[in-house]
Length: 382
Figure 1 (tube, rainbow, N blue to C red):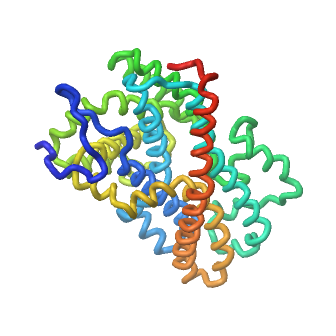
Figure 2 (figure 1 turned 60 degrees about the vertical axis):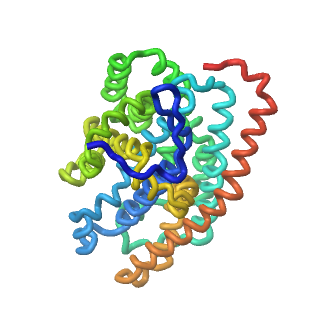
Figure 3 (figure 1 turned 120 degrees about the horizontal axis):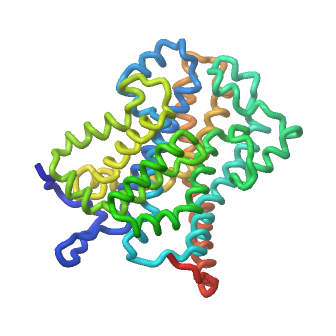
């Protein structure tokens, strides 16, 4: 049954001959990124609690656990990133100027990353109290155990964002995904070039090679990004295919694939098959938001879209806030979980909004100005 529902307010369809071209930017995908960041936060919040807590045990065994699926949410980030970055270039709708692409990626990723390091160091030095962490889980207690006087060299390496190998957990454990993102940003133009030239069978073969060669190495999750690139290349064909199915069937398939680890109680969430089942579930979610539907309208709503814009900073900042509020409310552990959850979410959201407005946006503008000013030197176009 085809999906015939109202088009999203944010998107107008452009007809070219017999094919339908969709807009290059989808607000609903910003919202999806925001919900994924929220899922990571909820997963890390649950991670602060001891496993013997009856409430936490009940949550982990309930469908609510799927909303706290931090590992799957990060994998969704990677697929979505490959899709969004490749979309303007994959079908040669515009040339891919290499230097400009890199300048824009650095101006997008690095400023908020550097700000999050500085804020985390300030919190660790002046607001965090390791002695108050005893009621919490071993995972959260293992963070911020360092003394800045003896760890300064390692902390300094963190600012290199993977140029020099550094301890990924010393400042903020989510930084591992930023290192992966930066590596993939360097290689993505060449993957786009390869995906353009290969036909569908060869693209699928290359995807399988990337999956089984690099799938379990957290530093080289290239298969997930390539999955996003192929999603961009074949989106029209895939959209035509999924329109044959009722929306509820698609949602059900996507949820099962995306939540494989929780639904089947699989211990290893880093196995190749599990990783890419999650990637396929994420791909279905993305495709469903590309087509006109009530779901796309909902995801394009202003509150969700706004939170989606803040989601990058939210993702980077939620761990420092979580650690601080854990120490502040640790004396009354029975009630403190509610306070920690509420205060961490509110505090992180507020500072994320500030970070987006006064750090992310100005540096994005600066990146565009640099690209415009020095475009005469950008001779390599893919």
